[in-house]
Amino acid sequence: MRFDEFLAAGAADPGGRRSPAGPRVLSVSDVTRTIRDVVRSVPTLADVWVEGEVGSVSVSAAGHAFLTLRDDRTQLRAVIFRDVRLSLPFEPMTGHRIVAHGRIDLYEQQGAYQLYVDAIQPAGFGDLAIRFEQLKARLAAEGLFEVARKRPLPRWPQRIGVVTSPTGAVLHDIVKVLGRRWPLVTLVLSPTLVQGPGAPAAIVEALTRIGRWRDPADGQGVDLVIVARGGGSLEDLWSFNDEAVVRAIASHPQPTIVGVGHETDTTLAEFAADVRAATPSVAAELAVPSRDEQAREIAILARRLAGAASAQVAAGAAALDAQRRSLDGYRPALVVAHERERAGALLDRGAAAIALRLAEARREATAEGTRLWAAAGPVLAERASMLAAARASLEALGPLATLQRGYAIVRGGDGHVLTDPTAAPAGSPLRIRLAGGSLDARSEGVRDSRP
Amino acid sequence: MMRAADPTPAAGLPRANDDVATLTFDAALAALRDVVERLEAGGLPLEESVDCYERGVALHERCAALLEQAELRLRRLAETTGSGVAVAVPFEDEDDRG
Image (tube, rainbow over all chains, first blue to last red; front, side, top):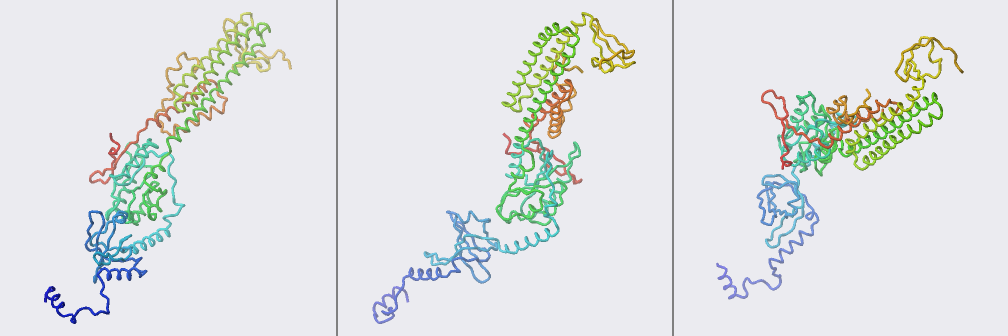
């Protein structure tokens, strides 16, 4: 019977199969809504973990993914909205075994119940976590992660080994940080895969190669090694939990820094490293001194150098003054006073010029920091020659003038001016300075001495 | 020895400081610190003070030049066939070019 025939027949027979007056007829929407309410009233369906294999997957133009989860008997429709999908650690593909979290609800238009996914993990994740904990406990029991094993990083590395992918942002970040912070090093890249099935073996090999490498120029190896990888999912980072990798890092001949950018748990490789860095860039920061700090350090030393040098010159001037006064003792007071005035003026002028230059140099030091010193070299040389000139003038002015009148200056064997006869017992060599030149002489003995 | 009286003292740093040009930063820094401390301790004859100072200036210039002019050198290990010994060859960080 066709539908239209049925309708015609029914219309002809009011007492036939028409609905009885009692039971209510529901619309499709009514039924669907009722089922929806039932589904929504079951708490376990509102917060459920479902494990299954991904069947078909399609992604709509809007970016939502529609997939089926199945086991050997049945299947469940699931939807992953775009924003959720983009935040997932991996893209579910046909054949993946996954554990999905979400709520069961009804898609009323199609009268279909489905899982609205908000999180997924690879199935067997639990096994992985257990394996991780077991390996961690075993290696910890061996002492691999002991703080006492950690080696300090060299303060002044010359060569830094980097074990990472030769392509991508990680190497670039490390190059950038080292170039900015401390470009006085050579970076030696030991390229490796950092993810995928071959990665653990590749990382171990790259570590071995950098550990053995020697610079032909001087036979030295690298001073430390950075092992780095960018952020990624738990699966991506799994190489850094591989036992062989962890052991290779722990037993590496040079100190190691491991920098893996991630938000999940710390990898075992990081536990085994001498130093652990939050990201590859931080690893590079930790590997070298700071150029700014060292520039400040040498600027401070430069200022101390200038200060000490000026103090030395001042001490030299004082010594000269003392020597002059010791000569004064041989000369008539009036002459001395006169000469002292002239010599003093000359010396004062030199000292004033020196002080001025020093003050300038200090101002420059403060203002210009490290650039001062090219300028300061000649300043000191000039200052020193002024002092020498002052000394020469003083000598010409003082003793020589006095010697012209018949005085002599007697020096002992050590060159010191003699004032006490007992300092020159019989046999002592003497040098006698006269106006016209010097005599070598020898003491015949002390005639008398005033106590 | 009377360098202070030399009429052309500014002509250049004394030859005695030529070794400074080959020092690493840390070696030059340590030497600079040593010179400063010796000079600060005092008691040196004038000539020696000048030598000390000039060496200090040379060491400082070496340190400053290293900080200002150093460029990061990049090497990449490439395995030589057969022997298994890695040799380092220069490379450039692609993104830093240009």
